[in-house]
Length: 195
Ligand code: ADP
Image 1 (cartoon, rainbow, N blue to C red):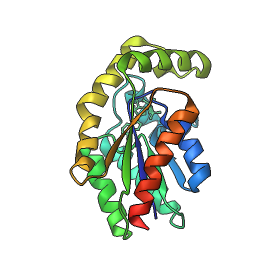
Image 2 (cartoon, rainbow, N blue to C red):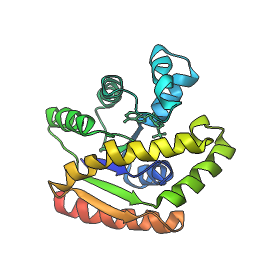
Image 3 (cartoon, rainbow, N blue to C red):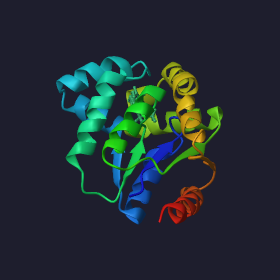
């Protein structure tokens, strides 16, 4: 099994790259952002709770997020592996994920961080907001808050996996193909060590 965390700030290209990685490696893509948007669109109880946080650019509480993630993993046991996108976003979430995978006799193979500057992601997010209509991408103050939350709460997740030599930085600037090639190179070397 190969289990990847696609890591990086909002707007770093995780969703775009995940879609391509899924095709190449036949892994299950789990995006907590997409799951929350699905629940909000369908106005479920979970969606109503999540909305109070996502619309401010804050993290949804771990108790809600971890339960939702666990359900998704439990629903899909027979896969080659997972690509986690937008999760874990706190060290507490990372510890819960390690535990969950451990209980299934597996673990995180690698965390790949797409590195992109704050200026670049702000430009990309505002552009995405125009096309997608995502409210959290249309307001500079909300974007600033998401970047702040990323630095304070989420960067420690990369350090958590760096401690066990599983965190890798990938340059996220360049064409979609270029970034994809860089990610694949890294994944191939990780695969070589676990096969
Ligand atoms: P981004 O473009 O910021 O990477 P996502 O689509 O991954 O956005 O997530 C959108 C919003 O959903 C986040 O700003 C946050 O409010 C919430 N969210 C997504 N994943 C998590 C998580 N793992 N923990 C807490 N909140 C999350």
